[in-house]
Structure formats: C-alpha cells, structure tokens
Image (cartoon, rainbow, N blue to C red):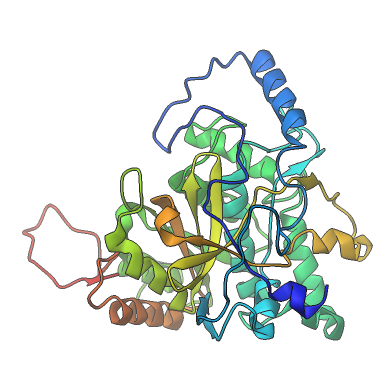
Length: 398
C-alpha cells in the first residue's frame, strides 16, 4: 500500500455496517430470548452464515462506497501523542501498531455451546480484547514501540507475537473469545450474549488474575470513582503502605454511563481530553450490537478501530510459524473517525500505569486538564467510612 492510500481517513456515523437484529440489552438487563439451547444455537448458527456476506470481511479502504473523505488537516491527539494530521506518516505508523481484534469465524466451538463465530454478539468482547492487548503492548514493549521496528529487534518480535497469541480464538488462549465468553457466565451472561462495559471490565480483571504468565494487574473503578488508597495498596508490599513500593503495573478500567440514550454533550470536552493523557490505552464502548474501540480525537471526531469485520480465525501455532498474513490481520491499515455526538453513552475508559509514579502523574494530569469541564469520573483519597462523621473534602474530578 503506498503512502497516498494509507493517508486517507474514513468517517463513520456509527450506524454501519449494520448488525444482525437481536434482542438489545444492557449490563443489568435480562435476556428475554427463549433459551432453548439447541434451538437458540441453531438459529444463531444460521444467522452467522447469513451475515458472513453482509458484515465487512476486509479492512476499511480509502474511498469506500458510501463513506465520505475527511480533510485531514486538523491536529490529532492519539493515545497521549500529538500529531499534525491523520495523514502524518508518524501517526500512521503509530495507528497501525495498535492491535485490531475483530469478528472471526470457523474457530473451535465455545463449549458447551456450538458457536464457531462471534458475529452479531462479540463486538464489546472484541473491543475489550483490543484495550487489554494495547495495555500489554505498553507493558511489555512500551508506548513508543512500533510494528515497523519488528525486523530490527528479535526480542520485541517474540513479545509481540506472544501477546497476539494470547488473544487467539482457542480454548487454550488466556484471553480468547472462548475464555471471555465463558467467564461472562460468572457474571450472568450466557455465551452469545452481548456484554456491557461493567461486565467486560470485571471479566478481564478475573482473566488477568488467573493468568500466571503476566504481572499486570487490573483495577476496576466502580461507580465512576478512583480511590487512591485502592491503587496505592496494590503497590505496597504485603499491603503495608510503610514498605517500599513493589514493581507492579496496573490497568485501571472505569466503566461509565454518560447519558441516557445519547452521550450528554456536557461530557464532550472531558472525553476528548482523555486522549491527551499518556496513560490512556483507549475507550471501549457502544450500544448493543455496535461497540467500537476509540483511540484518538481530531476536532469533534473520534478515531476508532472497528471490530465489525469478519475474517477467518488464525490458528494457534508455534511463534515461528505465524505468517505475515496472520499478523497483518491483527492491524488496521487506515483510520476511521466518528462524530463524538454519535458515540453511545455506555463505555469503559482504560489507563495503564507502569508504576506508582505514573499513577500520581495520571491523577495530576486529570486534575489539570479537567479545569472548566464536566468531570467524567472522580479521583478521591479513600472510600468513605460511613461509621464515622463525614467531613467535606476536596476531591479531584475529571
């Protein structure tokens, strides 16, 4: 692909490609579909086959039918990195280095169900996978790592391929669609049921806890509040805050709902400012059947990676056996943008902190750039103790 083709950026209104029309639900809602397992799975299997020809199966390309081109002259904030435009070669190198995890078909059944594809229900699961995979890239390779460096550094190649293999569609991969869907059952989500932001956050937290090969931690900030003591206790040795900090890294997930049916405009400025923060690993969200993974902002539009592209599964292999085509299928060649006004209010924000110093920096940045904005979440010192008298304290809001 030449540079001219790579520089084109597509816009999207979050309404296409359309998803199979299934029962909409949220994190707390119940599934009203009659769950006769055999009948239900047979119907979904037929839907999968039908929609293979309707859901996009190839990466977005410049000048696609029905998609207008965007003048890429405004400045861009991309996961804490500024770029002059979306046509900038350094932006493209950065963008194409982010993991892109999409619908797959023909993978081994997610037992005990018979699902061999996640089309129509797996978009939030895939968005969550992208957020976690990006955090692993930060953790093991660093924010400045680029895929274009692979030929020069064998060690980074091994780490990169290992990270992608963790998300392969297999019963044995620690963060596969299989493991994510099965773990959802512990949170009252059946296999084949759409996840909301809270569910995907809790599922990823448990999966990381069970994965002994990584030293990354996940903290889920419930109710839109980050309590400093919750995080500092992670870094304190044996829970003793008087001891020296341990070398632990944390992915902070903040599930939020910023409006009823639509994103409340008062949150636009703060949401855009998230992408100015170096610790930001992305924002996963969207309505049922149409979750996206947002990674940057240009003016009043958000840059996103779209999981709604159906492609064959990549089999788990020895690391040396993965082909360039296998690895290319985990990266998007061109950026797409959506108006911030069309973003669904149900989402989860992710911040990666390599150590306690980066967490302190995150808190300071949130306080600084939130001035004059309606906060998305609050940073407080510690959870309230309702058994004691409550004094009004000054909390940082973002």
